[in-house]
Image (cartoon, rainbow, N blue to C red; front, top):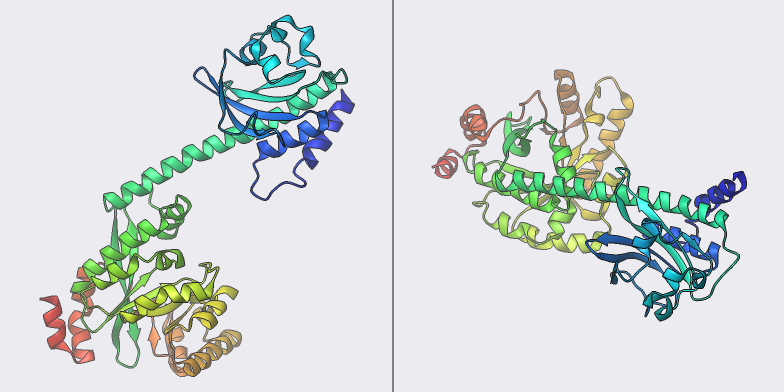
Length: 427
């Protein structure tokens, strides 16, 4: 038994070698077991009602006999007889077992050697069978092979159970995100983007706030939506909501909207932006967003930029991706990450990095926005460095649109000198 387990362990540890990158664990296990036994066909079946449905198949050159998705009646195959003990799990020669030899499928395939064990889920449910067979009898098959087969079946059952659980969780996640979208279980908050020179807001970033319990941060909601395949749907719903509410903000200010590259490239954003009441719009792309093809993505930005939409790279300085985004996409605004701003008054390396990004921005015609400004000393140093646009709790926390108007509306009109247009927009 020790030797069997050692061989089985070696096979299990090595069975993945040579497989396709996206190949399932079950398929790789089937191939490894079929080769080990020297048989021609291996499959994983699932019992659905009175049918055996073949979910994974490894039968090179015999696809005309069996392939994934095929099904047979359980009355026509060995499965029920094996589970009931009327046939053994190991049959080196089916001719020696009258029940198997008398079944039509034995001659039709034909089946000379057969090894099959049940796939048992953690709760005790029998999912289906893990099976290998060949057209000729093979007396070399023995109980050591059966023990190894059971090891592979156990591994496969574990993976199937995990995938089923993941599928249930994904369905629940999709339903949860769909409810959030359909019932608008979120609200928008607006944080001012401040001009030091004008001493007033020049824009507002729209930030989502979700109401369902348990309370979670927006990045977790958007992350879950992306994993559930509804990332763009949720982002577009939030953007639509933000634009609807933004009419009450001062007309001279822009609204910054967060959008992933996938949402932008999807093409649906242009129509929503077109309904933005003529509002100046900035699209913010986070440093953490992955862009596979910059040329293709830049092309998807063209219709938005034709509408006057400007582009910002968020979280600049947080990692290497932001530098690639900046170089490849030529943004209109570069938003410095909080990590660069915190303690900038006493940290020379942070000042040097900010100064370098500021010099780059001046060369390329971009504006710099310093995010996460929380102290007067940070603001003072940014002023010394020549940065005009800042955002953070020192200037204002994210608030509802109504609160933003009450707090900044009159001041913004006085500061920016366009009270007539602002009054018309609010009206």
